Length: 412
Image 1 (tube, one colour):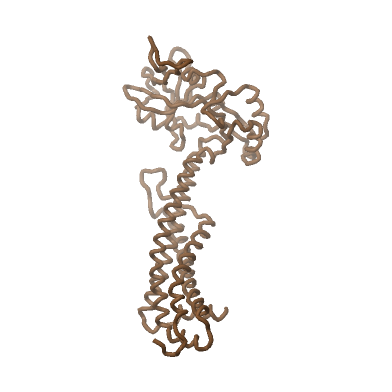
Image 2 (tube, rainbow, N blue to C red; image 1 turned 60 degrees about the vertical axis):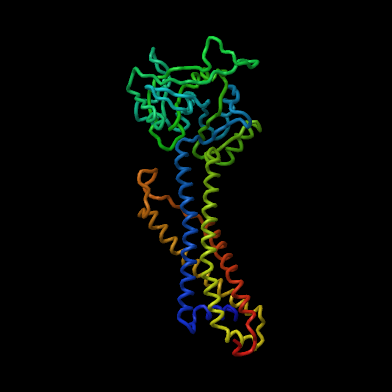
């Protein structure tokens, strides 16, 4: 350890001439520890919610979703589908067609998504095993009408009962405008109407289908007045050992630049970006709190400088320059900040373990019983750089003042 570092260590821990200075220094270190723990825990809580969110949507999101680079729908032929099946790692391909519609059931109405799916769709995500009320049946035999599987939230809003054999779920879809424009719809309404018999309810709180109605893709195409080859996306299930970037790249190269290939995470990219923005805004607010806490550090260092004025004068008379003296007190500030940083890491780790395994703070009635929390190594680095940077800035003014102390012994 060099001389300035030894001096910084002694100035920080040696008994001061006034006990109040020791107390102020301890308060400053304690404040840094609390601020460090708060910053790390804020990031960890947002990490936990992010992990929870990804887990929720991973249950029913396909391994890969292919959408058009431009527009809401595109045409797909059988040759394209066969080619996808021939790609290494592809286990199943499903055609889907989605659009917003108005649903009416038992004199109640609500807007939601209607999603047309083919017979391969259950192989993509196993949604047929998540229908607890009723059954996953889209092709109803006889004169009972077309089948529809309703998401739990929408079923709750409309009061859908799949055991009711008489009440029908009515879908209203805006009728496409005639070619050439114009608004004359003489003798007909401006919307299409079709009735479905609810056959089951999706009981998965983790899925988009929780607020949608699944119908046969042929019926969805009829409602939207599209061709038999129109889809809004192709959803793919991959073989277990092929869920990787190489497989995504092969699919993208096969489909070409007119299509976008999204993995599970990219399918929720907008929401994830929003969560990232919220996380770093919260971190910025926490950093402002650290800046306020750093005023305690400034006060503590200033008191140490005043307490050591005679020592500084002696050092100056022995040939130490003002910049060297300033360097000693910058080290004092960084040392105090570093000790507070380590203490904060220990405190945050302790609270992390208690929350992770004992659930100190709970969220009754929500998706999880306790606040989710997750540590990531780069968060420690970010917090350390932030705290040490603030500590360095807080040390500059007291250190500059120490370098201005005169070189005459006993100077006031």
